[in-house]
Amino acid sequence: MIREPQKPILTAADIKPSREFLKVDGVFNCGAAKKDNEYILLCRVAESCAIQEEDYLCYPVYDEQIDDICIRKLSRKQIQERYDISDPRVVVLKNDAGFRSVVNLTSISHLRIARSMDGINFTVDEKPAIPFCGKYERWGMEDPRITYMEEEDRYCITYTAVSDMGVMPGLLITTDFSEFHRMGVIFPPENKDVVIFPRKINGLYYACHRPVPNGIGTPDIWLASSPDLIHWGNHKHVCGVTEDGWESGRIGSGAPPIYTEKGWLHIYHGADRQNRYCLGAMLTDLKQPDKIIAKTENAILEPETEYEAEGFFGNVVFSCGCLLEDGMLIIYYGAADDKIARAKISLEEVFVSMGLKT
Image (cartoon, rainbow, N blue to C red; front, side):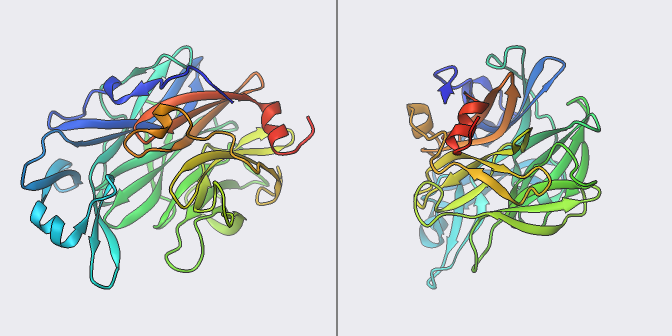
């Protein structure tokens, strides 16, 4: 794996805040596409309040009643008595029984487009690509994945809608990255990491998704099929966490599957029990995509550089978008939850890492 360049390609400093009272905390976890020789990244941009008050924690939320972001406050005294903010991303309610629940995020994320002719030097739009809409996005839109539907010449974009009602995948469709058609929530909460396959299989659409069990079970990769991209069923388990190592905490799909002659190539993420995120690779059967042909034992990309190890949430490499060009896999990934980086590896090397002959 070669990091190219040896530094992030986008950081918070490259992003203009969407509103005067907000500041950009990070740009990361982007979907990737190429259209008319132009590289397009649909980036997650996280923003928090530009000014914090001494006695209050201020945080932004989307209010569908006024169709805009507003600022809410939680007193420091309340936080000390009832809440845990040790994780910089969330405000957690705690009680004497040990029950903990997330009651707010400290930031709100939106989706913004960046464009480039060389895949490295990007220009970022000044405004969000898609405005917030409805109660399911009160806490933001996160982690977009872009699938180019080859037979239909359109792009399906999955993203995570976040609110006090839960974490759930939504679907957008576009042909030009200017107009986006909302298709609504396609899986109920709690579910995320949805990636749609670029081709139908036996006349059906397929997607990988990651339910989050609250009790029995672990956060694993599942498969579902659909006749219309809206109604999903025939769920099958694909791959689970390991007992120890780099994917012992949770796993989930990263970039949408890529068609190869050997099978569907999946670049996925895994985290250990200390929340250190790495990337791995998996190959599934072209006709039975729940059947694993091969899988990497070791991670193909780990948080090793300073910009991957240190940031808003350190020790994280997390990809939502890859492109295959001339036998090279170009991986765009979020580093430490606040910047975007780029790496590349040959398809041959990926196959070898899975124990396959080339």
